[in-house]
Image (cartoon, rainbow over all chains, first blue to last red; front, side):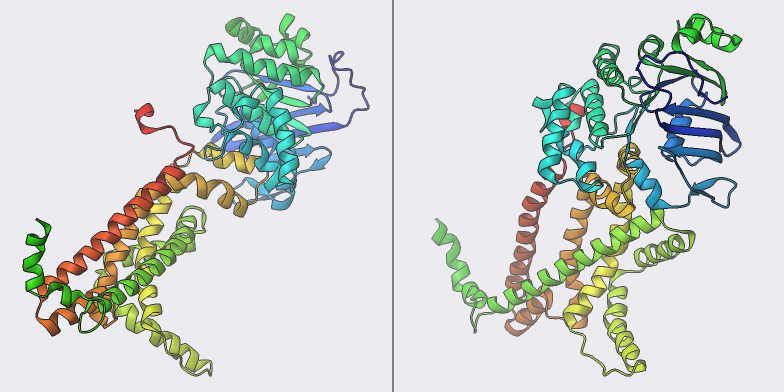
Length: 270
Length: 250
């Protein structure tokens, strides 16, 4: 089940590339609801893994388990070779055993949320420098200089002193991507980054993500944008009802899906 | 015109009565006012501290802490403030001194100011707990989650994200509490603390000019509220800087 064998990746990554994310037999239940039923997945440095599947298939939960925003019920998660230590929480699930470890791992994972989640009380540039300054201990001047470069890159430098509520959804999401990039993440985690956007704003955000993929950033991308997944991903994973139903190169998966469920899914979402 | 209005006042000796130096009583009133302000500010500050801790405890604390806080807010909000003030004003110094005595220290003299701040602060804390709890609940959950996702420690999350983000939702309630705090200081007149109301009563009793002195005290309380309102308005404007104007979101 593990995604180690794959077709030629688009980014020229040698097989020796280090494993950035490794997930093994991950289970997650919410009460009686069994959301993830033993998912295994791995991504090497430079991989762009697109996770697709219909609503309720567990793809967002899978992503949120990587940085322990959801604690898995059971299973193994390794980030950059370091296993997240979990302990039983007494209710049949787990909680991170070492808060310091999970905070350290999280600070190097750039999470981008469906609903942007920029901090409303901070201007755009303050949002971008917040984590480098508060969590990573970067000097404010250096963080600001870096943040300006990142904002220029996502095309928002002239909006640096604007509060998020005064920006469009697309601008907020590009700002959120800049915030995630500011931590110099080993892996970027995208949780349906365009699902909350008006259709005409989707393109500008996808363009930024595609640019990141081209420069060989490691990314896990939960998305409903099939065309986009096919274009940028090096590897596609199809989840169905909490199980990894099929995975492979984007061409293989979209052109000749093997499982009947994936065939149905592709027909439905086009 | 003004003179003809003020003339009757001057004839009854209002200005002499309110003169800041004896035989006028204005100085006493001002001293009482300053004492009231001190108690009010101290009680409000203590209430904010208790309220912040209480709100966090109620939201994120363990079962025992949550129950204890529930008992605290229920009891304090159930019992009339005057009863609580009488209880705390006399009981707290007594408890402190008994404790010191058991530990083998000499008893200390707990000043009326400290006892007053403790009494009103504990009352304020119960209400502030609920105001701040509501404000924290009003912060979009995603913003707190974003802080967690980037590896913030719980204290950093509180300091950098939750507290500043909940401030705009807390200010109307906290402004209420501040105005209540300034007026609750009058309850301390009952226990003989020389705040504005007690000073006023003494001046009025000595001169029999009840109307004059209680009107003067009323004006002082009103001025305090008016000045507070200007200040609160500015703080609220600042706290809402990241939120869209009300007119636009209507």
